[in-house]
Length: 358
Image (cartoon, one colour):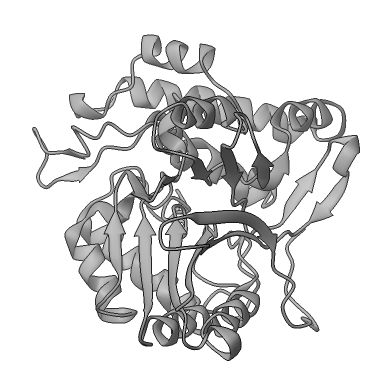
């Protein structure tokens, strides 16, 4: 029997392409529901009908941080109740994709595994995990950290960035609070408090690469948005420093540490190389960066990044323009214990039309 694992990441599923009144949802970045459903159908039928196929959803599948600050003034205070409401809204907004997941997981020899990312930290709640089992399939599993098998190491990748690192010893805050809340890393706190305000004005703001060129471009072509972004950042940091609950305060010293160690959209190649130096690891697979990569940093060692399924605006001359690359990692066993991983691009069936937000 063929043994296959498929790894995708960074869908950032929001509340759907349209708002309740039928307008285009400017906060939704994912437009590939049909393409992903097509891919799952391909890997459960035809030549793969009798194969053992595991789908690994490697973090940031759900965009749980995209909460409008004008709707929730304490959007960075994430309780289990808020997380359940967000997950329900996301599932309702992507019914075709969820149905495809349900159909895929329902077959013999097929499994679905979620790895928690920094944008869907809400999956840490046991109640949220159970809600997804109820709404998708009872067999789906969840992992916080990494997933390892036969020399392959899979993790989202945010733990290798100072601004997005989650403290595994303190995933929830409880002291002095009426109920537990998620302990958001610096980057997630900033995303909710600052970037979401700017995204209301410039929906593409989180989809532009590389970050430094985006700043330079804004200085010349969109000075107002740049100044607003700086103002939102300053206000967010001041508010974070003087929050009423001491556990949620972010000191200026911590902010300076993060800023000096900050790397916007790194490739994580150094982190992968450090892992590959450990035996018996021969393959490392990350997501998080939204940059699909296939590298061999050490002899007979492989680093793959599964990329992202959301559109990207690239300002670098080497790849100038708007693009959508539906990349994934395909792992197949050649022999009983030797998995071979390759980065692939999904083409699927032709999409006649789609909603876009520019």
